[in-house]
Amino acid sequence: RRLRELCLDDEFWKLLSFENSQWYQSLQNRRSIFRPLAERNGDTSHHDTMQINGDAGSSPTNAIYQDDFPTTCSLTNRSRKLQDMANWDPVFPGERVSWYDEYVQRHGPTCVNWLQTPRLYDCGAGA
Image 1: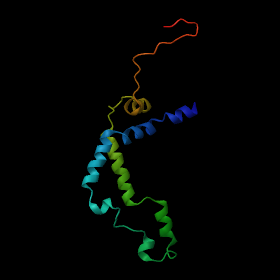
Image 2 (image 1 turned 45 degrees about the vertical axis):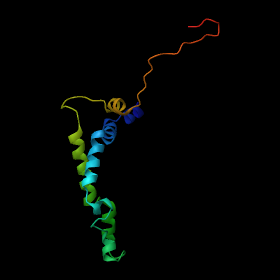
Image 3 (image 1 turned 90 degrees about the horizontal axis):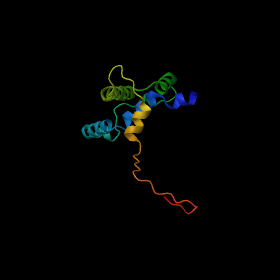
Image 4 (image 1 turned 60 degrees about the vertical axis):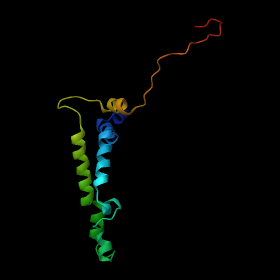
């Protein structure tokens, strides 16, 4: 029962539905087109304080601070993703949605078996 609750977690399946949605993929494509060339190449203007100062052992608190907490750039990316997810969410207030079923219906494989092949029995009687 506990495993079922874990596997059918609505937030997990909602995130998967969002990340695999055509809307989000086209939004990412549009953003990548208009993103500046320097940002596309991974050239950022902020560096670690240890790289700027050149002395790695002089400020251990700065190293701990930078390792433990997210940078400003990652916070803006996270907030942008949350905002995109809020804009994408097709659910009306008060509506209950099974995001697992929604994901399977949108992204699951399509299998249609219109005709069944006849079974032949060993007794000699066939259908």
